[in-house]
Length: 92
Image 1 (cartoon, rainbow, N blue to C red):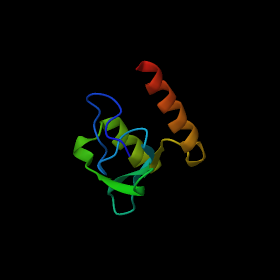
Image 2: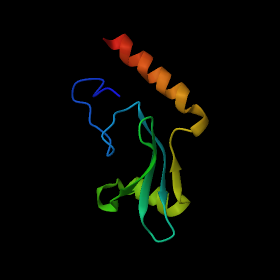
Image 3: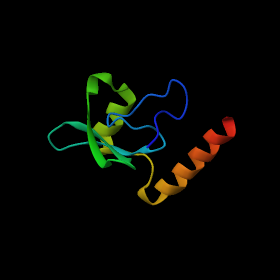
Image 4: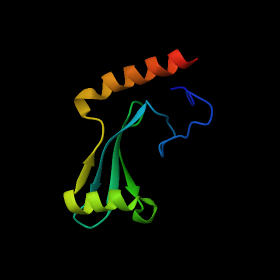
C-alpha cells in the first residue's frame, strides 16, 4: 500500500493511512477498558486500545452511557473508500 495520500497525513497505529484504515466503532469493554475497532485493507480488523485520558469528555460519556459509538458501517467500507479516493484525486 502507498504511503501518505497527502502531505502531513498521520498514519494509524498499524502504520497505514486513511482511507485504507477506517474506524468501525469505539467500545467500552466489560472490564472498563476502551478500544477502537478499525478495518485496514492491509492488516485486516484491529482492536486498538484507547487511553481515556486522551479522549474527549463527550466521547467517554457516550461510551460510558451506550457502550459503543459507531463509525463506518461494515457494509459501506468499500463505498466510503472509493468516495474518499475520488475526492483526494480531484484535489490534486
